[in-house]
Amino acid sequence: MAANLRTTRYRDGSTIPHVTDNTAWTQLSTGAWCNYDNNPGHDATYGKLYNWYAAANPNICPQGWHMPTDAEWQQLELALGMPAAELNSPGWRGVVQNVGGNMKATTLWNAPNIGATNESGFSGLPGGLRYSYDGYFYSLGNDGDWWSASESGAEYAWYRHLSNLNAGIYRNLNNERSGFCVRCLRD
Image (cartoon, rainbow, N blue to C red; front, side, top):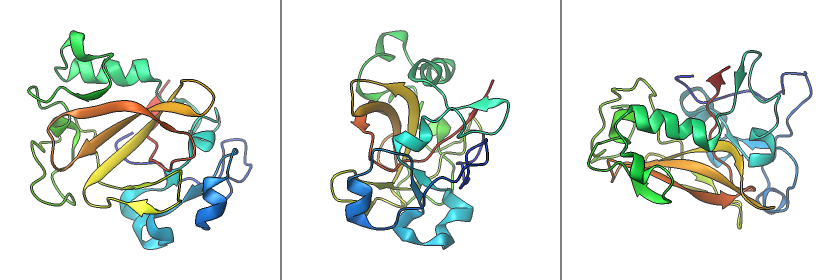
């Protein structure tokens, strides 16, 4: 998809809980969503933030779509010029090749928005995030974060991160209670 997910229901019709309280967010072990800063005005532009429990639910995406695995994110990165030797590395990768810049929208990012071309059509936006440990919101305008469907251990999953200050794409693990955006991939 070329936009972040905005659903409040799973594909089977069941409701994804809307959690606004910071303390409640930090204690979740089931699916939830929120808008950045609990402001519904951000929804149309940036989509919703989901914890990994919601994002990993097989019914989060519409029929015919699914949340991409870490390996599927790597396929996209490789197609955008990521050196194969960097694919499995955590941290910033594909900087020289402008892999992250090719995924970033050219608008809505705070300056300097290094490398932004949106050559890939991914249209990555700086929707910010919600931290797992305090439930606070951070980095609207500076950072965009997206879950993968790939878990590592009991409380961590792989994600991708774009920044206005870097032309690469960041890959690492994050706590499953964090709130990130979701992009769906066609089956």
